[in-house]
Image (cartoon, rainbow, N blue to C red; front, side, top):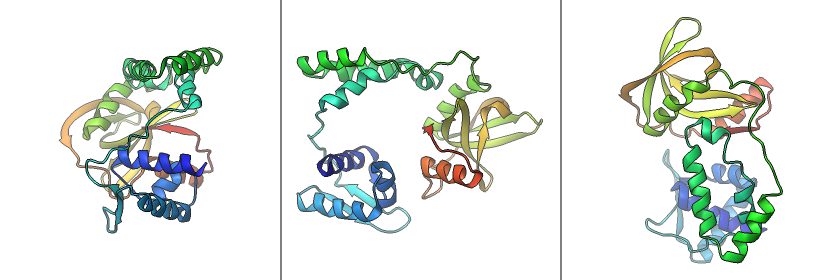
Length: 235
């Protein structure tokens, strides 16, 4: 279990570039104290991870370092074939890319592992679709997704007749309803897409979300404040 966590930590740092102890603890579902111990273990094993303080602080790997410990276990390979190719990824405009990524990863598996994983995956059906019509606001997702990826502001027409300039920091799917978490002036708020009448791209750009902003942590705090659950999918 600990070896798996150490590998996961190493791969997280490899893909995220910089993460705080709190962020690592959240991702790995452990304590900050355990993260400190695991970082020390990685350093003792020769992994070039270092930490620094300040607003841009956190843990990083030395530039250019890449782990070769990326082999999948049997169980990890099986999950590739369990995940539905449709659903939220399609709504966000990533359906084809998600399918292509899964096929490429599956093609890289050793023959025996790939065949077993495909066979096991065929025995599970995770249907992410709904018999109900598409949630209101789903048609706004492509424009918002592009804005999130490109860090560009949008002009949003709200259902109350007002219009605002939003800086979309992320998109959240909660219980079948889409939201964008965006900066507006000096505030960060969640906007239900069902409450937006239209979204227009803007040429204005923003650098990044405020220092310390983490979509999952922000949404979890909001859910706790409002007494809601926090089983969400965010990007």
